[in-house]
Image: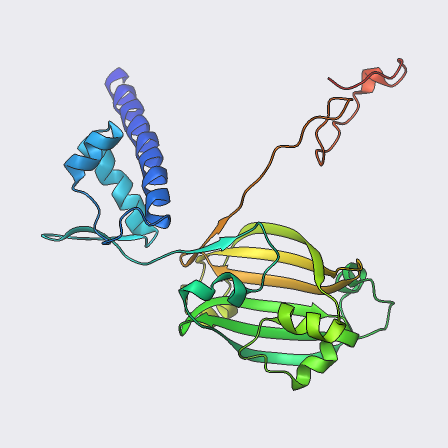
Length: 276
């Protein structure tokens, strides 16, 4: 029994170490550390990461399962596909973001005037019964499906888009022309979801594949919300990058933007104190 336990612990430690190595290799691949597309030999990687060859082999297997590398006898390990960097520091449309990587085209699958679900109307700040523009686009980069975008727009800025060139333009650029003012800011939520059958077919991805899901509510410079989007990106073709600054603490000890911790029950009748 003790021998089995020891072997299980050893396997777990090797699996943990393999994930660590895979994380480091993934970053090197995404950031173009291997410009020829060829990864070093297992022995070289084992030396560089201070790991055993078995651990490196497991790490490469993990990356192959992700579709990030290919392994061929006599050839070695090569990068299977480029993952495109999508910055999170500025409010840009997809074509603006990826202009250095090729041409973004948009296939309009649906565009219509609808009475929005209550949640959508609330987010856009429209009265009950007021209609909005609903737009669904399949977005490609150099002909390859990259994202499926579901967009809700205020009618005043969305209706003129019926006559616009949506195939070759970002919505953001068109909205600024129509509104006569720049976009200001956006509220962003990012999470992982699995591809449903409809989305998988549209993106030419396996059903259940991991997708990057972005929910974004964009405001004009005057503060009005105008554009609510639900964007599903192919997770194997895109990587999100951002730059975050840590704000200085306030006099009470909290940092700007950080939620205040809930007050403890036993403090309810005591004198209020600053949070540590």
